[in-house]
Amino acid sequence: MRVNGLQERLLSAHAADDRAGLVALYAQAADESPDRDAACFFLTHAYVFGLETDHPAVPAIHARLRAEGRI
Amino acid sequence: MAKDISAATLDAVRRPIETAHGLPNAHYVDPDIFELEKQAVLFASWAGLAVASDVPGIGDAKPIEFLGIPLLLVRDRSDRVRVFQNICRHRGMILVSSPRKIEGAIRCPYHSWCYATDGRLVSTPHVGGPGHNRHEAIVQDDLGLIEVRSHIWFDTVFVNIDGEAPPFEEVHADLIARWADFDQPMYHGGADSTFMLPVETNWKLAVENYCESYHLPWVHPGLNSYSRLEDHYNINERGKYSGQGTLVYQQLKGGDGTVFPDFPNIDQKFIDGGEYITLYPNVLMGVQRDQTFIIILEPRSLAHTHEHVHIYYATPGTDDALRRKNCAQWRGVFEEDVFVVEGMQKGRHAPGFDGGRFSPAMDGPTHCFHDWVAGKISDHLRCA
Image (tube, rainbow over all chains, first blue to last red):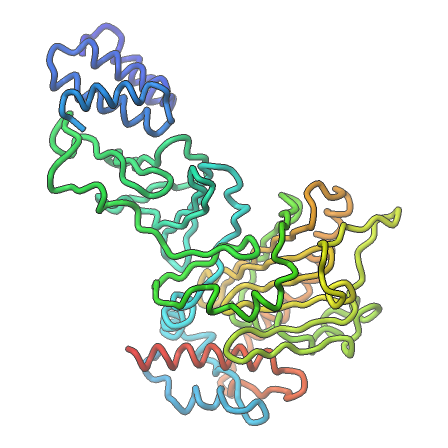
């Protein structure tokens, strides 16, 4: 993850228990990751918080993880 | 010690009421016998846990500890109320620690394994390594939440912890038939129609006091004006349930004469009177023309019980003031019983007490309950 404020925003979202925010931020972290493994790591987190909150992005995240053979 | 319970002791309880003794002191003051009764009586039968109205909306979840077991009451996405053991199948972490609505999945706060509200394990993040969410050794279909056998009747959620009891509808077929008139919608009165009474007593004494009408004129003198002792009858269904009924039920009225609406199409006997029965082991129930109530006895420990009271009506949206007045009246009646059940608990430390004797005319319902408890213990010890 690039140190461009994303990490701070993730920590803030965790501290605020902003789970919908975490979905978006972890998805962004995945998008900005330099390799597949790192991307799938962050995408997994986006997926979990999405499942917990019934987030509308879940089907798309699930499809990405499935395409990578990670789910 | 529990293992020292003799057949003669239990036989003395199960004799005809004229010569029977009640359960001896140890059943109220001995921690080992409390543990035995947990297994033999409370876990082996259909015990009242909660009311479905505790989780009124889809996704509502309420953690409940029942005799030390962490349970989770959930209303799933298909509107079905379920009971699970409140633990993750991974490392046994408590899943839900306070009542809340589950928006999507139940996420374990430890490693984030996720469960659907119907108990299915739906996600095992990083279980195959970082970013790898499957592992061949972890079969999700085999690792759903552990569901506890449950059944709902009169809005009450009953659980059979050991999973071995015959079906609820079979065990309680007679009572279900007896009160078939009330097999119709009933509406919890809401926040002003429920309360909890903590009492320093063994849960069985609350049952015993509820079962009989013998004490009414002494402990509830206010009832004498409209429901005299001679208006009551005993309900003794040995091995099944017991309680009492009244031939005279007087509806509560508001200042302008308002009453609660009746349940439709009920028999005349329920227009004139009411019935008050203990569904063994721990649910005290009452039915009347315009309201029903449920009291779930939660055995917190050997000599500490929480009485959870819930009042129901035939229609939603009853008169607010009348409903509050009704709840206050019931609270007053039930509070009048507190000194009795706490006094009997203290009395069980008197070494000379031999379980006591029963009035053959008046104590049948209490003896019926003792007989049932002794029978459950006998069955358990025979199988142990």
